[in-house]
Structures are given as C-alpha cells and as structure tokens.
Image (tube, rainbow, N blue to C red):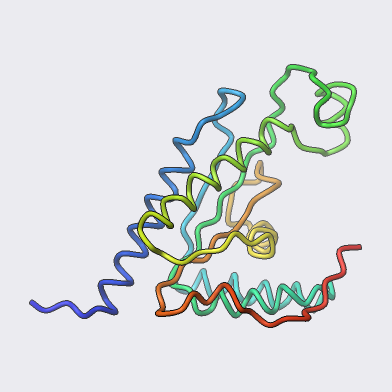
Length: 183
C-alpha cells in the first residue's frame, strides 16, 4: 500500500485534533471542577459552521466572520473548546459581582470557568504546535459554533481552532483592513 502525502496530512490533522481535545480535557483546572467541553468538527458540519459564520457576518455587520469563514473552509478540521457555566461557589467577587448568586442572575460567567477555558485552549494549541499543525484561535468560530449548538446548552463561551497543513500558514497574512465594529 502507498499512502499519499495529502492523505497522511489529513489523517495526521484528525489525530492531532483528537489529541487537542484530550489536552483540553486534562489541562489544569483552577477550580478543580471539570467545566471544559470540546468537539472536533469536520465534513458537512464544518461546512455548516462556515455557512453560519457567513450568515453572522451579514447579520452583525462584523466582517471578520466572513474573512475567518474562508479559513474554516480551507481547514481540514476545527476544534471547538468551551466551558460550562458553573459557578465555583466561593463568592470571591472576581467576576465583578457581589457573589455567585448575583453573577448567575446577571447571566455572567465565573472567572474560574473562563480561566480554565483559557488554560484548556492553551494546552490544546500547544499540542498542535508540537505536531507542526497550523492553527489559530478564533472567537468568530466559537461564537458561530455556539449559535449552531455544537456544544451543550451549558456552554456559554467557547473558542474555535481551525487546523490545516499547507506549505504556508493560511491563518496569517490574511486580508488587512477588515471592518471590525464590536459595539
């Protein structure tokens, strides 16, 4: 049997995506609670994610959704990592609210959950880097994934990490001057 370089690259990216999910799961947790959730998106689901990003560019006027959708389209897989909204219960006020009850009533997020998410994303992208798989952390992908319901209903914040292997990293040197209006 002879396996082409292209087939090896695709198989490797999918293997790395699985390892990234594992790294997110086993990353250190500040609260000691597992609130991290991850999925690997490929094929038709990846196409649906790309389409949702294009629709969000239209509905929000934030053009970077359209720019980033091109990266998703050219990627072999996308890893989505989010955190469930589960207050730690310490009433530490680091979230900006008086206590966990007030934070939950406001629909905000526990700082421990968000910090754990950041650590999980960092752990995951380090796996991609160690395997020389090009990647980029994108909020546009995460926001679109939430709208598609790719993670459980408990997840309110997530990031998307598209993965590719080309001779030049497709996630950099992207179109300059894209309109960003976060209001």
